[in-house]
Image (cartoon, rainbow, N blue to C red; front, side, top):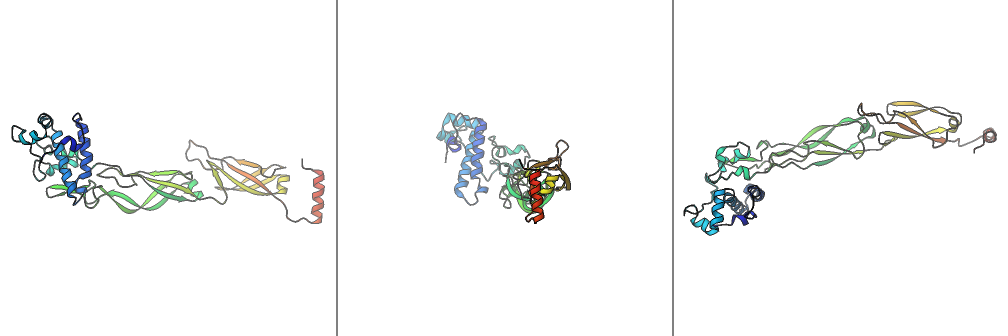
Length: 332
């Protein structure tokens, strides 16, 4: 049975060698029997593709096909003997050398008489695995100070059956690895430790290289993207590297001025309030915000907003004093 190699591979007669190889590689991977077990249609299609590539990848065969045409090429080509397609179960088709060829062994015998190199043209394809995401919940203080967290995740590693190649030897040839289904890697439940840098922000992404989904055919794994979600703090809010808090202050301290003790990330600090401090007024404590992550950065600041508190009950004497104060120091 003859075929038109150009139609089979979906290329025109002006196609270059690299275009022919690219077309074959794409289609051969789609219809390869090891990736379509039990599918006779795929197996037949794969043989046709390989036959077409055998013709077009060899300049001598390609020239004779172009000169004679399909029928003449198969019936009376090659000095009258006609073209004979390579057989899958013989040395004409490089099954015996395929395993080494995929592994990069570079065996000279990997080329058939027609110049067809299965390993060059067809590859299970080293494909990088996809990245995957994992939500990482951090409390406010841990995000600022940094830490090392422990995660139980499925981590990809080389398949123990095929050594990460995606194929195994079978009866003098090769087949797709039944353990990893040709991917070359398998996932195992592992406990991994991830370093969380100091000052990480809500919504930030931490990338762990090689911890994503498995690559195929020995390709590198994707990355694990940790999407950081920082829980609110009871005391502080954060904007960039600066921290903010509100502090209740008695009306008397605001009137007279004095020292106000405020919480910080590292303990407590004293803030000097001037006499006549107003409700809602904000003061800055320099360097008490988010600590510097490196020597090239400066620490953020802490901003304290004053919320004046008033006495809820006044005695007659207190009211009299308030009236006298109102007359002595009226509010403008």
